Image: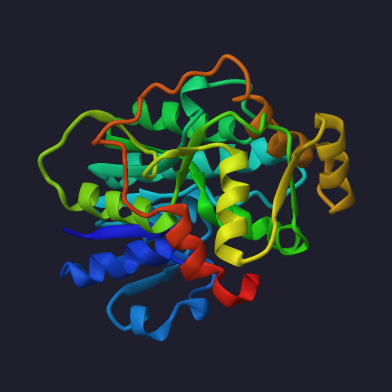
Length: 290
């Protein structure tokens, strides 16, 4: 079975590539920057240069592929929804042209809402398009990545993280490596068919207050979390250089799921994964966070 992975240097893809290699598969790694792949991974994989927002690139790169792990690439333009639509057009065109049998799509909790969740709306559009493509598809509805804390690593070091979410509202937090494990098992399993939704919720729901407590204990110094207004957070994004539409899309991922949202899949054995935030902090931040 020929399996392709997009964004193989990403938070999930870098783990997934190694897992497939260890399983005996020689994956096809699709990337704009093959020179950045670790040599030990590239040695055991096929590599092609590809822009995920260019349908011709994706069609050419996925010829003969049986299954694809598809990730909509990070937003790069002032129009984030347009970026998502180009990526969606690319994977759908490749499925159609190359009769790709299976797609495992890295989506997000909140995509089931379809509209009103900022950037997650772009993932929702990809879900809908893949559902119509004729491929067997599994949507991985992932929780909040532990690695998102790295975007605020300076704030963590300074001891004050800001959020627009209620500090006592629990939500799913997950390690990207655990998502990769679920993706690998799904790609290698030949028994499923049709359309599937597989939530990946991590080991437990956490509030921001609990996250602050865990950070404090693991880093050995106080880390506080403060709730700020939507307007203050948007201004912070703009000050960081985000175009207005991108700032709105990033903010919308929080505000769109803040009120009256219930995930399609509740936490269960099927959706829970083992890596705790505490162990991830110890491994990924370690002494660098002290």
